Amino acid sequence: MSPTTALQSPVFLFYLALAVGLLVVAGVILAALKWGLRKNVGHAWTAYCAWLFMVPLLLLVFFLGREAAIVFLTLVAIFGFKEFARVSGLYEDWIITGAVYLGISATGIVSLMADPADGQPGWYGLFMALPVFVIAAILVIPVARNRAQGQLPLLALAIFGFVYFGWMFGHLAYLANSTHAYSYLGYLVVAVELNDVAAYTCGKLFGRHLLRSNISPKKTWEGAIGALAVSCLLPWAVLFTFPQFDARDCLLVGLIVGIGGQLGDLVVSVIKRGLRIKDMGATIPGHGGILDRIDSLIYVAPLFFHYIRYRHDLNPLP
Image (cartoon, rainbow, N blue to C red):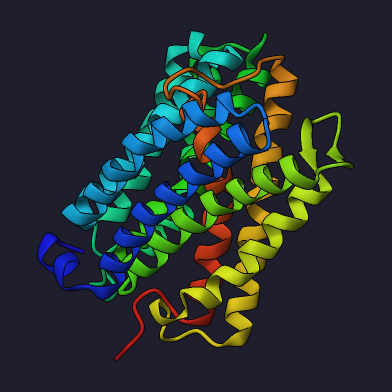
């Protein structure tokens, strides 16, 4: 990944055009829902306006190259964890919180490093082993401070925060090391967001049966099925960006996004319900916090990553 490579990559240029096209289509759909069907889309319109800022920013980061993408996505993970730490109360313990910050930073550093075994970008072995070292370091903190009272909840929050918001999301940044980085990153970002839009739109139009009423009362089975259908069709629509994919890959990758994206949304909803909050933060107008925007990507990224690595390797031989 580099500016020169991006300008010469038909895949990057395709996703650039696709992102612009989707923004236009989304605007038209929202307008039709609001003025044609008289639906209340005020929140969605605010979110759409925020996308008008976020999409160009993300495209710029991918255009600048591998290092910029990894650093940017690691910073997103750090600020996402900060939101979680604040709403959960973990932020009051600066030492444990700081250890998690260091752990998330380490995922970015390891992703930037070359593998000493073969010289490939990204130290995969250490990246996979990192949770062991970070969790071990977190567990030592109360021992070093000679504290026991009230430490278990803090340790649980810290370990969960690092593994879920730091390390699992870090798989997305690591994909920047792949030979097909533009294909994988472009597809994941577009597919996950399209999955969200399809769930919202189908739910608004056809929603009758609640999906998980005690977790997210506005989500419906009709929305979920519509999102799954769209996610399963998308890999076929962009198949030319995946020259190594066959029919099985298209099916399984579609299922990973279609099911995993919605589970990721529901997982963060469980956390918010448990903490009795509506949003993780207010960083992005219309979207809530950073975690409210990347909740699906957190869940999908490692599933997609390991499927791709198992089936095709991240840097296959020519």
